[in-house]
Image 1: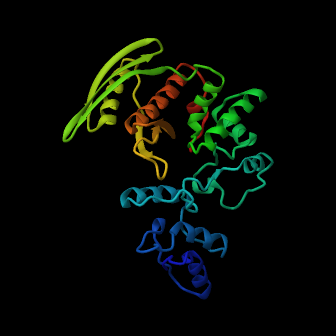
Image 2 (image 1 turned 135 degrees about the horizontal axis):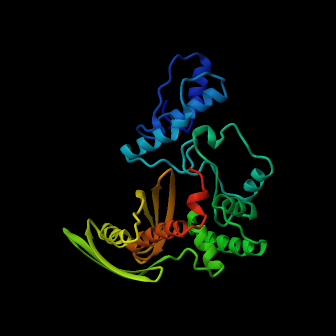
Image 3 (image 1 turned 90 degrees about the vertical axis):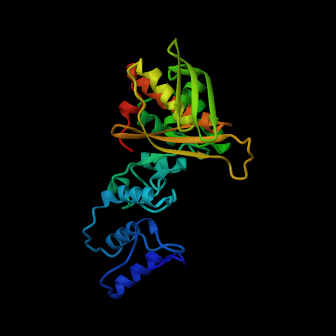
Length: 315
C-alpha cells in the first residue's frame, strides 16, 4: 500500500487482520509519491501488535536501511521509526532522568532489539541526567560545580542552534575548565589553492605537542588535499586518520553566502563510529576543524588517557 495519507502501516495491519496472505512493502518507504509501507515498521507491528511469528532478523534492519539509503541516494529522516538516526536518542533531560530511575519510559522497542544503543542528546533541553549519562559513557568524572558549568555551556550552545555531538563534550569541558588536555595538534597556517578543472593544492603548518611541522599536498578539492598533507605529517607520529564514512555540510536555512558553515564527519574507528564537528565561514575549513578534532581525541587516548575511544561502546 502507498503512504499518501500516512496510513500505509495501519492499512497493512487492517489487511492482515482481514486475512491477506502476503504484503508488499519496501525498505525505507521507497516508492513513487509518498512511498510504500516500510518493511521495518510492518515487521514490528505484526510481531508486537498481532503476535505474528516472522522469520525476520531485526538486528539487521538498520544495516539494510543504511545500505539502501546509500545506493538509492534517498536520505532516511532522522525521526523515521526503527531506522532513523534519532529514534533511540533521549533529548529531554526528564527522559534521561527516567532511564536512571529504572527505565520509567521503557517500551518493547528497545534499541538493543535492533542492534542499536541508547544515546542522550546534548543541547538546550539537556538536564543534569543527560550530562551525567554522557559523562558516564565517556568515562569522565566532574565535580558537581564543574558539571553545572559544563551544562550551562551545553545549553547555551544548543540555544544558539548549534549541533553538539557526544564527541564535542571533551572539548567543551576543556574550554569551560580552561584545560589543554585535548589540544595535542594545532593548525598554525593553512593555504589552499583551487581552480576550475585543476587539482587543488594545500600547504599546512601544524604544532603537534610542541613539534612544528610543515607539509603540502594535492587532491580532488581543498579538503582532499588537506587530508593528503595531514596524513604526511602524522605519519611521522605513527598515526593514520580513521576511515571517513560520511561528510555532511549545512548552513542555517535562509542563511547568506557569508553564513557560518557546520560540517559533521562520521569516522570509522575500528568497532565504533564517531562524529566530529567543525564550524567556520569557509566550508573547507569547517571540515578541516572537524578532522583536527578526531586527531586530538585519538592522540589524547594514545597518550595513555582514558576517554572516548577506550570507554565507549559501539553506537
